[in-house]
Length: 271
Image 1 (cartoon, rainbow, N blue to C red):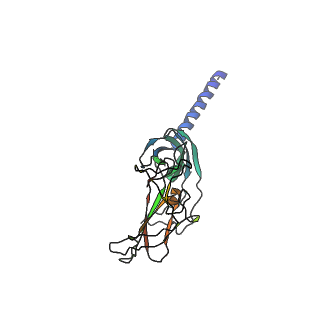
Image 2: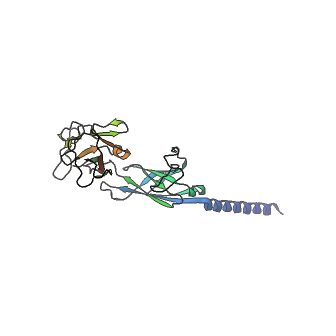
Image 3: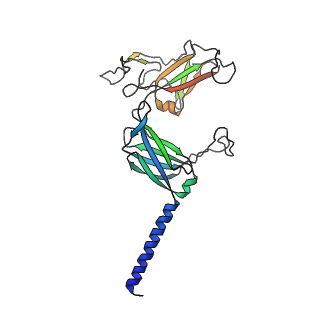
């Protein structure tokens, strides 16, 4: 065999190995499509993004679906806190096609995204073998939040919810806590219970010298239920409500509570 024939044969073998390896790797990979949409202040999620960073991690948390018996209930095992990184990169536009190792096809994943600008970070869980997910991100600045509290005597029957005819409790002090302890200020640094001045169109009046909303009545951080047993705690940091607020009455009867978002004024809140 001549040297030229030997070189040609070696080139064919190398090309075959490259093609074989490429096909083998593709056959072993899992494709995941991540779509990201922006949500406006009305929670309408349809705005395309121009780019975002993404991070895929293995979801090692213990799952305990309600009503399903599992051998590793979170009540019986140590909660996993380490989430190994699988892949990370940047995408232009509103979607990313991510190629993952085949071994990830049988594992739960978690996708986190950080838009280039104008929107919050967000994420979503990916079930084993799932091919596509949609991640919703919210437009900045984040709206303020409010908590609606209902205090009642839960005795007809005792079931942790309000039933028609149960006594509504007036004049109860409501204490609000987050992970750092008791909360006494709203998002603007004023005492809880502070009310603000609004224009006829529902937008807040802004002090041009400070850029802050105009205070109508300064609060005193004392929140009490009214004659109907309810009270609204307004203009709170949404980060606190998202991570969990605890409502506690100063008496020892059963209380019920519900939470809902507060529409914002230009940039932050509405009345």
